[in-house]
Length: 263
Image (spheres, rainbow, N blue to C red):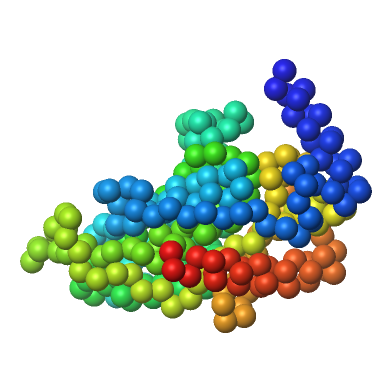
């Protein structure tokens, strides 16, 4: 029954797209409303819940002490993981990370990493011996499309508010005590588009993602740099469409940065 309903919903989305319309009535270049809640997880160094339309994600950061990589003995590291929980949508499954979840985590990670938003040298505890490793995981609690942007917003705010735990003389974490915050030099954000029936749509819903011929996510920073991009699904974009999406991404991300400035 659900498969049949989904096919009909996709066909409806495609039919509307041909007319320049969307299922939820938004304009093609209209972003959904964003709300933010912080400090959702007591045991995290930082945590953020972001709601984008009906899509909801929860991000949490834990910092652990690790050994630095041989080629960067005075730098810490970060790792980003993503999980689309079965409770978020009927199509999400439990078990090992799916290809979609792996891609989701990598795209969000790349947007942060390639922007050099986090100076990894600040995560050094003692060169060649001990560094901080930041593990950020975000979870889809409700899935109505564009987990990329929702995860990006949640990850940025979470890292921005991350606290550095205190250590004893043996570099063991003193739980519940902190020594300053992570410092971010830039504010990278992803902006995601899909093409449905030849029309470019910003911030796709779940049905629009299913109806999409192609998907494009671009990470931009407030200083006018494009730091990462990812093309998904099997279709293609023209050069004109790519240029349009990049230009639009700078405008949209700047608006979002202003909205979450104090979060």
